[in-house]
Image (cartoon, rainbow, N blue to C red; front, top):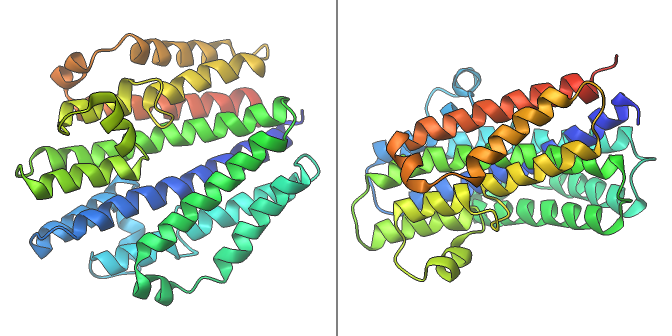
Length: 310
């Protein structure tokens, strides 16, 4: 496969996954903002979203104040923000269009229809009727694209690069969401509102029902972290993403990719044999930061080994 084609497929998947995960992150913060709390605390939570995605400087050029409405406008519909949902789905469509002949007709139609529907959305109407409905639409469209991909694409290198891009982006964003929300929630007051906040975090990662099935007990910080980091059978966990990456890389391996495969194996082993007690003892933030650094290095390695022209 041409490196240019692989690059478009890889970034099409990453952009789609990034849009979905941005919707999940924003929805979690929006749901938590419904719990009574001081306005300053609410705005600090929205500020954390910008910091998590290194967008403080770009945001400050457009808005004078950090507030729920301003952050939502910036991260949902700002065409100049490359990480906004609008920009991510536009990038996904552009990358898909560049390799339209490699995709199945159903897959192209799913990506293109998502972009057309998005352009018809009005940010004022989205904010007026509540953004959760829009976030559910983003998650649904991402799921449709993913389902059509697995249901119609040949199991060849094209699918492997799509899968690889999605897994890298999902792992990185799960770590970001958990890192941002965990410390806010860990220091919260116990009670009904605290349960609601933990539930919102789990729901943002489609893990609430799974948590109840696995633990059948009260929601605790340690178990939430264990579920989202170490459980390989949870699709959005860090362990599950690392497992998928380590399975995909040998399928596209070349003479230059041995080091990238080794790094993926080291990351997978750390998660596979890890214990939540050790993770928390060493500091959750430090653990998640290390994970995100390793994912970044893997992305760099994949670009170097497969996506950049020789």
